[in-house]
Length: 228
Image (cartoon, rainbow, N blue to C red):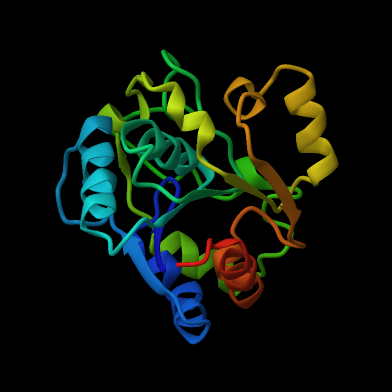
C-alpha cells in the first residue's frame, strides 16, 4: 500500500531515504513528503501550506494510504485524518503526539529572521539523541532546514470527530509504551485518549529512528499497514 512519510521539524523528505528503501523491499510504496518551506526551496510557508501538501499527497495516493508522522509532524498526520477520515486507512505516529484544536503547532524555539532554526544538539541531550554518534549528529545537522515561523507558530484547527475512528499506531522511541499509557491516562494527550483503535509499539532508539534503526522502523510500519 502507499505509505506517506512526513518528517518532523527541520527535516525534508530525504530523511526517509533508508526507511523508504526498506519499505519497498517489503512490498509497499513509500511516499516521502517534503513540506513547503522545509526543503522545497521556498523561504516562507504557513502551517496551512504544510497541511495542504499532506492532503494533496493523501488525495494522490493509490487507494487509502497509511499516513506516518514523526515528532511534531504527528500533528500533521492527525490533521490529515481530521480532513480526510474516509481516505486515511491508518496513522502511525513516531516519537510525538497530536496537538489539540487551538494549540500552537510547534513553538518550541526562538524565531529569528522569520524562521526557527535547528538549535543544535544541546536541547536533545539524553534519551532523544543517546543513539547518535558524532558522525550521525554532523550529518543530520548539516541536512536540517530552518522551519518558517508561520509554521511553528501556526494554530491547529480540528473539526471532524471521525478522526478518532482512524486506527493509530504509536511508535515509542525515546519513551516506552507504558510511559505513553500513563500520559494518556493522566490527561496529557487528550487526542490520543479519544482514539478508538490505538496500538503502541516500542523501538529501541532515540528520537530519530529513521536514521538509526531504519530497517526496524520499516518493519514495524509494514507490519502495521492494513491489507490492501
